Structures are given as C-alpha cells and as structure tokens.
Amino acid sequence: MPAAHDPRPLTGEPLSLDLLNTRWMHDGTRQDLLTGPEGLAVWLAANGLDARFTADAPTLRNVLAARDALAGLVDLPGKPGGDATAVARLDAVLAHGRIRARLTPEGPAEEPEFADPAWGPAWLAARDYLDLLSAAPDRIRACAHEACVLHFFDTSRNGTRRWCSMAVCGNRAKASRHYARTRP
Image (cartoon, rainbow, N blue to C red; front, side):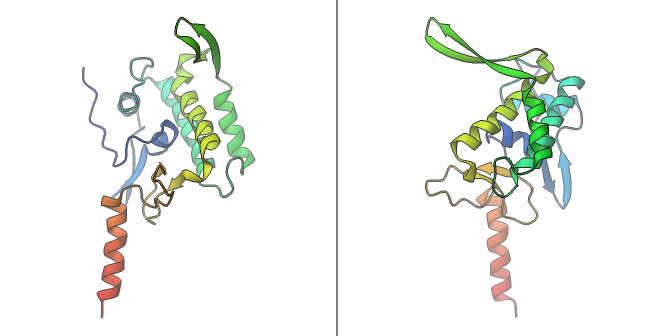
C-alpha cells in the first residue's frame, strides 16, 4: 500500500530537523503531521524508515518525546547544551539505544541497536541532532521569516542561508520589503 502524501512544505532536511518540521504554519494556523499513526507512517516513509519501524501508538509517543526534546534545544542561543531540562529530555531518548560496532565482510561498520524497536525512530532523530552539533552547530537554523516555524541545516557554500525556502518565505520577505518601499 503506498504511503499517504506528505503535506509538509519543507522535507529532505536531516532527520532531526525533518522531525521538527512535522509542525508548520499554513494560512496562520499551526499544522501537525504527527497527530496519529497515519501521520507517523508518512514521516517514516519520507525518511526511509517505514521498512524498519512500525507506525503505532508506542512509536508515535516516543517520536513526539524526541520532537519535544529537540524543540527545546534547537533554537537556544549558544547551542549545544543551553537548557538543562531539554538536554535531560534528549538524553532520556538517547538512553533507549546505542551504536554497535561490528566487523563485516565489507569492513568496519556501526549500526544502531534498540532494546525496544518503538524507540528506534526517536533515537535516530536524537542521534542525528548530535551528529549535526558535531559537524556544524552554527548551520542549524530556524527560518528567518517571523511567521515560519521550520528549521533547516544550512548547506550553502558561505553559510548565509536565511529562509527555509527562498521561493516561499524568502519571497514573502522580499515582497514585504518592496511593498513597504513603494507604499505612500
């Protein structure tokens, strides 16, 4: 059975930010993809996790816990560990999995392990956030448009991306500036 259409305006970001982007604004109203297992199935499919994990109530509960923990951390000035409560919530998610090192016929490999598979997607998103913090914490950004709640990882060459989408939020900002300049 094909997965339902993903209604989110921004997809394809790293897993942790993609999880945050399951909440967005549409016509001034906050939308949430993760209101039930059906939305979780869409998010799992969008990230290639649907073959490994089940879109059920326990997995949804754990993914929501990870999203809330990430939301408490991502916009803090002076990342990585500004708010002790948010850090503790993220650490609680990370406590449900680990990386197992192995030697395979192809060479060294690492794979995640979970005592309870319902924690898998949540743990992977939390671990992805740690990886982003290790790589470039200053490139984890919130969209600069005041009415947007989306996040992105700035992969632009000079690191100056400001908008989740130049076609949407960037264009809105340019149109607002133009209107303000031309208004009598």
